[in-house]
Length: 95
View 1 (cartoon, rainbow, N blue to C red):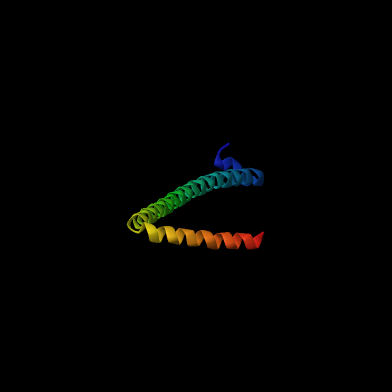
View 2 (cartoon, helix red, strand yellow; view 1 turned 90 degrees about the horizontal axis):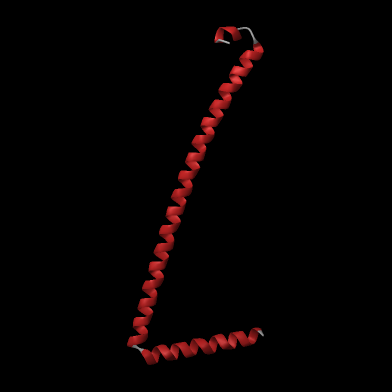
């Protein structure tokens, strides 16, 4: 059937419009899916950057702590003992 065959035929016109709407909906859904995939990739990339930055910060802090312990072993041991005592007293109170 040609377009002229649908002239004045409401059912044919409706089918044609529905087919057109279906095609547009599929195209829009594809664009939305692609946009969401792009956003998910970007979010994953940003999360990875934050995790890597956090890991670098932890490594830097651990290195600085190890260096301080090596430079001042007695002071570091006294601090560790003090922290252990405080934690022990706090845990004993809870039990």
